[in-house]
Image 1 (spheres, rainbow, N blue to C red):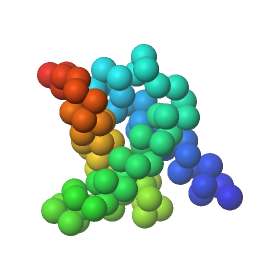
Image 2 (cartoon, rainbow, N blue to C red):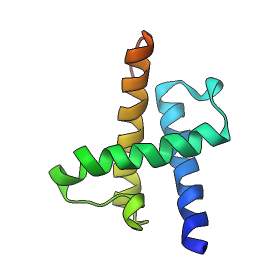
Image 3 (cartoon, helix red, strand yellow):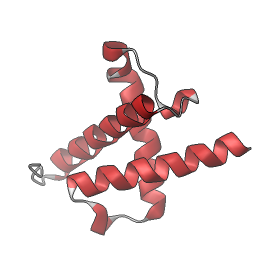
Length: 92
């Protein structure tokens, strides 16, 4: 049960950070931040983890490299969503 709560909190923080980086924070609330963080970690698990060999928060790995990989996955997810919505990507 505690692991699930930590997973939700980590997903919320990752989703919030990704939305800050991508400039989408004004359009989404806490629930969408959690969804973006967790789904972004799944995306990272499929595409980024095989390349660099670091797990994500979905693997019950709450280390700093896992959080960074999950953040990268969330940023990629938000970029793809913005492209399909017809919006422009924010340059960092």
